[in-house]
Image 1 (spheres, rainbow, N blue to C red):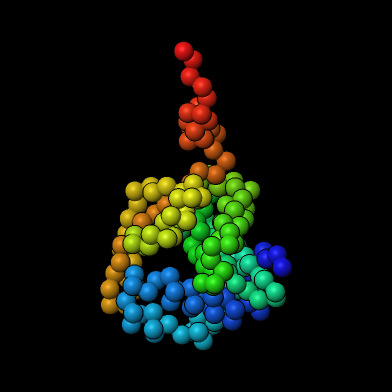
Image 2 (cartoon, rainbow, N blue to C red; image 1 turned 90 degrees about the vertical axis):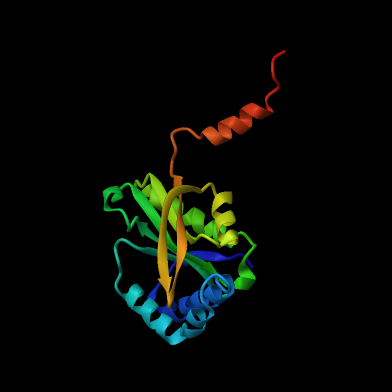
Length: 192
């Protein structure tokens, strides 16, 4: 059965919390303190998701991937939050998570494509995403989608420890894609 991508609604809060918790414990084990991951509770996450979905935040969009009537992942995005000078020009993917057993099937790429296309429709020229510096799998995922490090770094607190986080960015609707031009030119036969 093909996965369905749709807007999240209040009734998804419990499922979003389940995916959020499972994906964090799977993806971040060894990257974040075990005590922090073990303290995460489904009921607290579900309450946060319910409040978030009930608020109908204009700036944030949340889409889910649903398979066989069950939410298996989600993406949350909106305006770039950490740099007000880019308001109206840049978007940010604040979260993208899949159930561990759904990774590697292209569903994350579909969610990112939906998010970046929607941001482009709203006239954003750039999209950014923050990722744990040591999360090699996530960094490789964003790089495959054309995101590149933009030099921004910060330290985010998780329990009693702070960890380094780096920012990736990608142009939306670029005027000219030099990378693909170079690839095309390198395949053309050279004149002798």
